[in-house]
Length: 561
Image 1 (cartoon, rainbow, N blue to C red):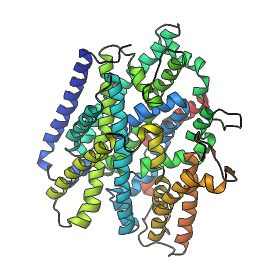
Image 2 (image 1 turned 90 degrees about the vertical axis):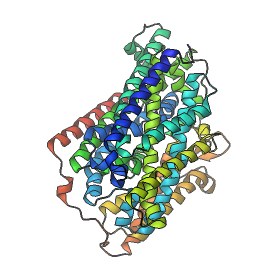
Image 3 (image 1 turned 180 degrees about the vertical axis):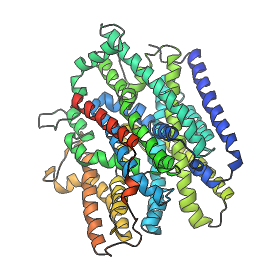
Image 4 (image 1 turned 60 degrees about the horizontal axis):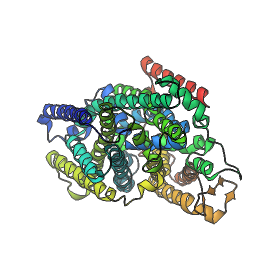
C-alpha cells in the first residue's frame, strides 16, 4: 500500500490537465467573437445541448462534497446517505416538469431576477447577498478544503496549501472563459470522474475480496460488504433508545430515519436543484425541451452516483473494521483517500484526475454563478447602471478572482471549522439554515398567485431565524424532549435536534406565516406569474425518461429498505 504518487500517475494527471485545458481553450476561441457579449459569457448564448446541460449539472454537483464527504458518510452511515442522490433524481423530475417551464416562460436568467419579477427589488437584493455569502463561505470553501485535504493525503502529505492554490488556478482558467467553456469542459470532467470513480470502486471491492479471502473479484467483494456490515445496507436509520450508543445517536442526528423523508431531505434537494443559480443556470439559456431532457439526463446519472461516491466509504469501513486499514487521516472524511492508496500505479493518477475533475468543475461552476449574481443583480443595478456588455464581462471576471481569493484565504487554516464536523454534513446543515425560507418563497411565488412581497421578505428572514432557533437554542428552551421534536445527546453534555427535523419545522412555520400574511393582501398579486396547462405538457420521450427513472428508484428502495 503506497501513498505516494509515482511518475506514471503524474503522467496520467498531466494528460488529463492538457486535454481539459486544450478543449476549454478551443471552445473559448470559437466564441471569442462574442468575447464581450454578456449573455454569451453568463449563459453560453443559449446554445447548450441537452447532453451538455446534463453532464454539466452532474460535474458541478459531484465534487469533493460527494467524493470525500459522502464517502465519509458512507463509512459512517452506510447506504442511507444514498437517499440524497436517489431522491435528487425525483427532485430533478419535479424541476424539469414544473419549475423550468415557469423560469423559461418568464425569461428568468438569475434567481434574484426571479424574485424581483415576482416580488420586488428588496427581496431580490436580500437574497442576492444571502446567496453570495452562502456560495463563497459555505460551498467554495468546503469544496476547496475537502479537495485539497484528499489530494494532499494521496500525495503523501505536506502539500496542502500548494494544492489549494493549484486547484484555484485550474478552476480560474476554466471559469474565466464563461459558461460555455465551463459547461463543455464539464462534459470531459464528468466522463473522467465517472470512469475514474468506477475504477476506484472496482479496486476497492476487489481489495475487500482479496483481504477477506474470496479472491480479487468485485462481486465477491460486494458480498463481503453485505456480510460484514449489514447495518450499512439499510436505508432507514433506527430511532435510538436509552440504551443506544453515542455512535448510534450520532447516526440518527445526521439522518433521522423516516423523519428525513417527511421534510428535510426534500427541502434540501428541491431548493438545491430548483432554486439555485449554481445549478439552474445551465438550463436557463436553453429552450424548454432541451432544458427538460438535460435535467432528466442528469437525474438518471444521479442514480448511479452512490456507486462512485458512497460505496468506497463502506469498503473503507469494512477494511478498517477488519484491521486492513490501520488509520484514517482526517476521520471519516479520510475514507476515500484511504481507499485510493490501494490503487496500482497509473490508476491512482486516473483517480486523482477524477477527483480533481470533480473539484475543479464545481469550483468553476460556482464562481461563474457568483460572478453572474454579483454582476447582473448587484453591480449593474447599484454601482454601475450604465455598464455596457464589455464592462459587465470585465466585472464578472473580477468577481471570479475575488470569490476565489476569499475562498482560499478562509480555507488556508480552516477558519470556518469545516474539518471538525465532516464536509458533507457541514454543507447540508449550514445550507439548511436558509433552504426552508428560500424554498417556501420560490414555491409559493410560482404556484400561488396571492403570495405577496411582504410575505416573501418575512418568509426568508423567518426561515433563517427559525433554523438558528431550532438548531442552536430549542433544546435548551423547550427541554430535552417535547411533543414536536426529539433531541438527543450530542456527546458534549448538551442536546441537539437532527438538522433535517430543524429544516422541516422551519419550513412548516415559515409556510404558515407566509400564507397568513398573503391573505391580508390582494386576492391576486399583480406580479403573479400566469400559468397554463400547455407549459407543463410532456412529450412521450420525456414521459418515458421519467417512468424509467422512477422504476429504478423504486427497485433500489425495495432492495435496500
